Amino acid sequence: MYEPESKKKISFVIPCYHSAQTLPSVVREVCDTMDKLPQYTFEMELVNDCSPDDTWDAIKSLIAAFPQAHITGINLAKNFGQHAALMAGFRTIRGDILVCLDDDGQTPADEVGKLLEKIEEGDDVVYAKYDHKQHSKFRNWGSRLNDKMTCALLGKPKDLYVSSYFAAKRYIVDEMVKYKNAYPYVIGLVLRTTKKISNVEVDHRERKVGESGYTISKLFALWMNGFTAFSIKPLRVATVTGCICAGVGFIYGIYTIVKKCINPLVPVGFSALITAIVFSGGMMMLMMGLVGEYIGRMYISMNDSPQYVIRDMEGENTMHDGSTDDSQGSLL
Image 1: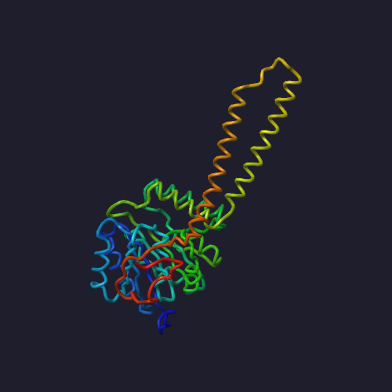
Image 2: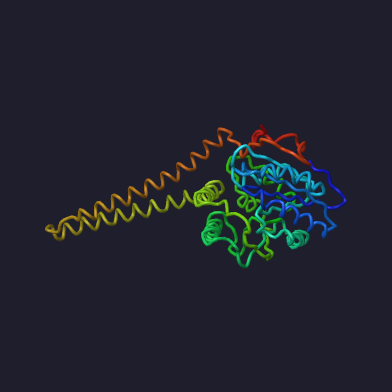
């Protein structure tokens, strides 16, 4: 458990991947911004998601270069994904308010005061909202698709904008870290915990160095994780679709029989039959694959697959809680 202080402590959690060049400026901006908010103290958790560059070395250098930031570096043993990296950071923080932001400098750390102000007004979670995102067209398309998915399957309000830059109260974090399965999805964990969620508008910056780490395969995996881990609506959609296909097939069969009875010389359409078989077969395979996805995730969870594995920890909270819980992650 964290010890309360006279000033509220802000815990910044930053998942890091291929960010050796951008991370120092992000840390410096956080420090400069928090100097202007003397009513708070702060700490930082930098989680290296097994980046292929020297990001971990950069994190260790930042721990020494910015002692006022109280940085904890967490080095994961392999690439578990952004949401698993966030969960690793969540389990080491000691602050009263969590703030998550990106490692590429596109999320403006100097506007964190807007998020904290909304938290102080009583909201449980506050997401940054961007009028114009400086991402690629592909990334923006993926974000829009993800937004529609979370609305349809996870019950996200349509007027709520969800981003990777957000602030949350401590009790929200305490609830999120109770999730022990291998496929964490932070948005789903937030939505199932509270309804007091709001937005504040901030600017979104252009990327100065490198490219986004999200590929189409990673975005697809994230979407699959989101709706299979926190919703059974896809299974209900599969049931309804199966009923519709069965009904259409039955009606078409009746139509074929009636047509044959009325005019026996009319040949039964071979192409129509093949089309019906291919369509129904494809739908069955699709639904079986969807069910298999759920069963596969259940199997992996039953085998106690960890959310993440920590190879190294350095800095401020290295001894906080000793190590992670075996049911949630593991420490090499």
